[in-house]
Image 1 (cartoon, rainbow, N blue to C red):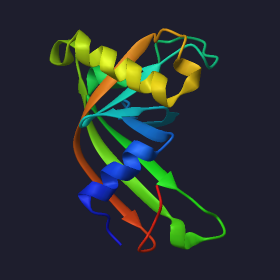
Image 2: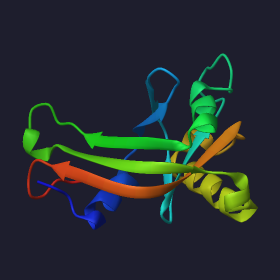
Image 3: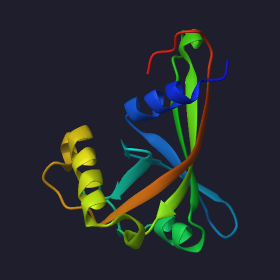
Image 4: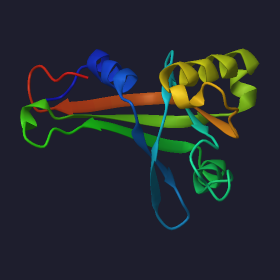
Length: 145
């Protein structure tokens, strides 16, 4: 069954991670990400907590070319499909000139609150997105976030 707009936002806020899809020149690039919802925006960091060869990731280059992305969050319960749900957020990347330092600090604080691993680190990059639409589906009447 289709989720209401309100329930989509509830699931999105409660999700502990998602898959961010961006447009590469020849394909769609999908990667798991941490994120936080701030007002009606989404923030996702590029950080150095997890091992990386570089912080200049493909998703940054993809978003520089095309600022559109999709964030997919879902709940999968292998032995009880009545609890399945997914939410898709369509995103448009916001530049620093569109947000300002106060909003950036608010996004960083939300990420540090949500993920203890981020409490003592600086972010290499902070991706901030306007959510242009959300849609979702659930298998049963009462899917929990």
